[in-house]
Length: 337
Ligand SMILES: Nc1ncnc2c1ncn2[C@@H]1O[C@H](COP(=O)(O)OP(=O)(O)O)[C@@H](O)[C@H]1O
Ligand SMILES: [Mg+2]
Image (cartoon, rainbow, N blue to C red; front, side, top):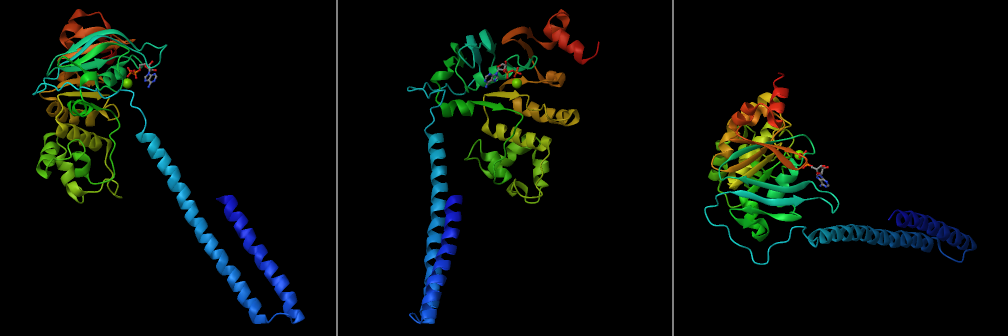
């Protein structure tokens, strides 16, 4: 388009110059009336303005084509986790038992992030997962949410292989919360309702109330109808986290995974969220990946992961009583003794 516009500007200048030169000479010779020259210059201008507007149209057309190509590419992308041809429905109510059956997984053919993992999360159990950066905690979380399929072995939800569960059913049963709570343009209510589009206003407010988000939402200029992208709607990290909790609560999943969801919060905010967290996790199977040990008072069981393996597993009290082991070491580290 830049070449096009530049050459067109040059074209207009040259054409006007040529018209003036040739026409001017002929007018001086008396071969052409001055009025005809003036009319001619006017026509040249009109011609070029028509060409120019068609060029603008061309510009828009090319932009639209580029956009359409990207959308088509996106829509035709093959998912790495295919939808099962014959999905097996989950028995209702979903109990939320997760079982890893000698699961191995690598992001590439050469790498082995998880090797031969056996693990059962019992229905309703709140499990904390600890371990150093790169240990494979997020990878385990993503496997449960079926962002990837294991290279070998199986992951079962209530005894059914994740690969056999219809995607829509799996997504509404297993929810993964991370640090980034994405707010789409629209109102607070729209954003909460994302997890359950048919929820009524009352249900949305009920979810917000349950996790303690109602108070700050009600204090916003337009309450639940506040546009989140509107100037002046600055939400704090803690408030965004509460919205994420409310969204998850509304979805009412049987299994919920928090991958360092509260890691970006300061400690007082995190403490304040504990009550909300308790409500959110009640009656669900929960896996909480946390840096800090502050989540421990709401967990029934602790797993310590190292190099894609579980190296410690038990209740916090059991693991501490043992005295040795990865968890006891982490605990001593955190408490400076
Ligand atoms: N998308 C990815 N592609 C390739 N390797 C990855 C990817 N995500 C994580 N890894 C690798 O997998 C290992 C475990 O990472 P991760 O599960 O994110 O650890 P954690 O959450 O415990 O810090 C690391 O060695 C990391 O480099
Ligand atoms: Mg991680």
